[in-house]
Length: 446
Ligand code: TRP
Image (cartoon, rainbow, N blue to C red; front, side, top):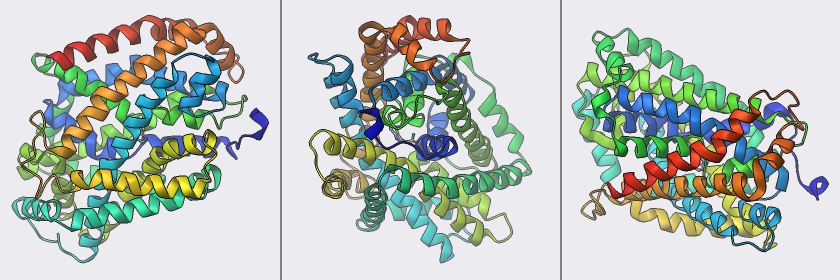
C-alpha cells in the first residue's frame, strides 16, 4: 500500500510543513496568554519540563505510528490492531481537531482584521488604553469577527483542496522565515525599552509557590496544543513520510523551532506588558494590545504592524490547514469521499460550530461555562481535556498494544544510530502515561 500514498517531495518540505503545523497561534497567541495567566516563570519552567519529557517523545511516537501505518489517525488503529476498539481514540482526536479548528479560525480572523486595520492606520498613535478599547470594539462587534473567521475558513478550505504536497509545502516555505524575521525586530525593539528588564525577569524567574496541578494541566494543554499533539496531526504528517526519514532528529528539530518561537514571543510580550502597563486581565487579547503598542514605537509602525498580522494569519493558515487536513483525510481515505466535497462540507460545518466562539467576546459574552466564555471553554475542553486524553491513549496503544519493540524497529529504519531508544521506550511506557493520567485526573478534579 505504501507505494500508493503520496509522499513528501523533500525532507525540507516535510520539516517546514510540520513546523508550519506546530508553529501558529499556539506559540504566538496562546503561549504568552497562558504565561500571563499562570504567573510567569513558574509556568515557563513546567512548560519546558513537559516539552522534554512528554512533547518530544510524543512527536517521535506519533511520527512513528503514522509512518508505519501510512494511514490517518482512525485507520492507524484499525490497521495496527485489527478488530479492536482502539479506533475510538481516533474519534477523540477527530473531535478535538474539529473543536480547535472552530475557535482557531476565530482568532486567526482577529489577526486578519488587525492586518486590515493596521493597513488603514487604525492603530497608529494609540496608547495602550486606546488599543485596549479598539480591541474590545473589534472582538465585541457582532459582525466583524464572523467575517474574519469566514474569510479565513475559505482560504483554509482552498489550500486543503489542492492536496498535501502541492498545497502545504509551497505556502510554508515562503511564510515561516518572514514571521521569524519580524519577531526578531520586535524583540530587539522591546528589549531596548526602559523597564523591559523587569518583565524579562518575571518571565524567566520561576516562583515555585505558583506551581500547582492546575498550572501543570495548563502546561500540558499548552504543549499538546503547540506541538499539534494528541489528535493525529503529527501522525498524519508522519504517514506521508518515507522510511528513509530520521524520525528522532526531525522530532528534535520540530520541537526546537516551536519552543524557540514561543520563547521569543514570551520575551516580546511580557516585557511589553510591564513597559506599557497593560492590564493582564485583557486575557486572550493580550498580544493584540501589546504588539501594536510596540509597533507604535517603531518607525514605520503601519508597515511593520500590517506585515506582522499578515504573516501571523499565514502562520495560522499552515496550522489550520493541518487541522482541516486531519478531518478531511479520514473521509477521503475511509469513506472514499472526493477531496473537494469533504473539504468544502466540513469547512462549512466547522465554520458554523465556530460562530458562537466568534460572538463570545460580544453579544454572547454573558454565556459562561465553568467560569469561562464560550471561546475559552472550547479551548479548555479541547486542549486540556481531549488532547491529553487522546495523547494518553495513543501512548498506551503504542507502548502496550502495538509494542515499543515494533516502534523501535520502525524508528531505526531511518536512524540506525538512534542512541536514546531505551530511554525513549521507558518514557513512553511509564513516565508519560503516569504523568498525564495524574496531572489530568487531579487537574480536572481540582
Ligand atoms: N500547533 C498549532 C499552533 O500552535 C495548532 C495546531 C495545529 C494544533 N494542528 C493541531 C493543535 C493539532 C492541536 C492539534 O498554533
